[in-house]
Length: 610
Ligand SMILES: O=C(O)[C@H](O)[C@@H](O)[C@H](O)[C@H](O)COP(=O)(O)O
Image (cartoon, rainbow, N blue to C red; front, side):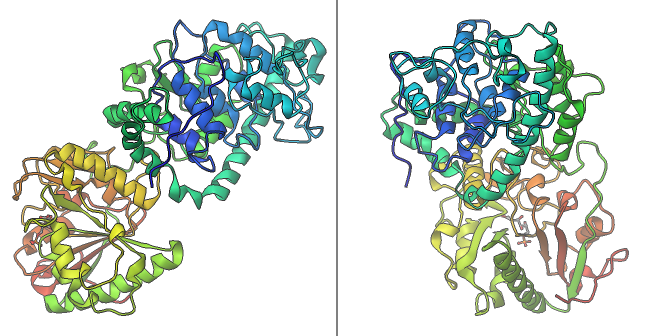
């Protein structure tokens, strides 16, 4: 059920700027809120305000130490470096608002006073108001909320808001908080510098700890990460009458903007993504920094960032970069020794170097019927293992002769809990579900009509989009990520078992030799409109997606492809797309009949055993 329109309480006079925040920020912000539709959730507030806010003048980026020292709290466990950075740069006239916020101090007596080495409470937190902007508006709901929460600091003015307290700096390290004036980089008072140093490393440690905790606590909730909400925000947006202030509008616009730039977006990691800040440039584009760039950013403020912490943090996570395409040659601005963002495991095509082929397990059987029997046993076991591990079994089917072979015995296997199966398609023709060319129809006829897989667990191409293969691919990408409960922008979804065939030309799914789709390294689903094998328009999983699977199983029988199979398995001929399938973590299996395996020499078939 798509979320009800959100009416984010906008306090009187608060700022209304149209701003479509890059989706990953909305996503990061919303993904940990208990209920993405909860308007009180700090993340939605922050995301919404961020979305509402547009730089209207050359902005001053929040000095990183300022963000490091505004710790997260149970209100914002993602660590307010992210929240603060989500606000990106603020126009000069917002400084006073932040100034007033700076002087807020939590009542928590267990807070370590800044400057204390290590401090007793590593969280060293200042509770983040639900909205920085609101806090500055006397009498605003958030200001009243903060007042009601008994914040010390500024005297409560008549409107219940908070007026700035004397700068804590004047009271020395004993006062927690931050200079009420944005420090001019490089001209820090010694005391502020040491406080900032201490605060920064504590903030990193604390938020890092929090991040892991949050990931642990919320990992089960990730399955309902608001991709569902997000992917329907668009429709909600329409349903919401397109109210320009609705979060749906924001998200919808952000989603549109994001999808237009998707090929340029990677995302920040789930654990440190909130810590490696993204800082907005004056033109609203987002510059997300990886560790080296972050250090550069910090040093540009004349502050000596705790390099190790950031470097460790960054290198400790398998994260890639959010590069805003509007920034253009940002990469060229990086230091020569700049570590390149970690790319998704690619097929090695870009480098022309054949990837280390995962050691394939090759099985051969006297007949196609015995291949089918072995597949039945293999998939039954794979299904049981996956369901035991994570409560479901996700499997992707190719078309051609594969479904019939796979289903021949499996469809009658009563030991398999099909209710926990999620069925995807390694590739699909852009045709209606009833079309004879449809792989969905083929798998439905061979298997689905015989077993009890819930219909909403069969993820098929959107019939509404079969006329637009590009959009059909994007939609399938979202559907797949939604069904697998993962983050479209963080990591490719992991499918437990991808079943593939090959053509005589070495194509697999709808990745054909000499076609650009094989080069795709950042999308999980792509499209083709000139398939050498009819029909011409298809969507297909990409090499990174295939190589992220837990198991990839090639099924080839009939003998007509024995030379092709030899080229792939023995020769690792990189001109053949199927030769680029090498799961980085998972297993690679070939189920062949003897007629197909007869030419193999370097990789003789092994005895089949589960
Ligand atoms: O949709 C498709 O056409 C298939 O996914 C395709 O990649 C198929 O697996 C091979 O062409 C092998 O087909 P056969 O097994 O029928 O030879």
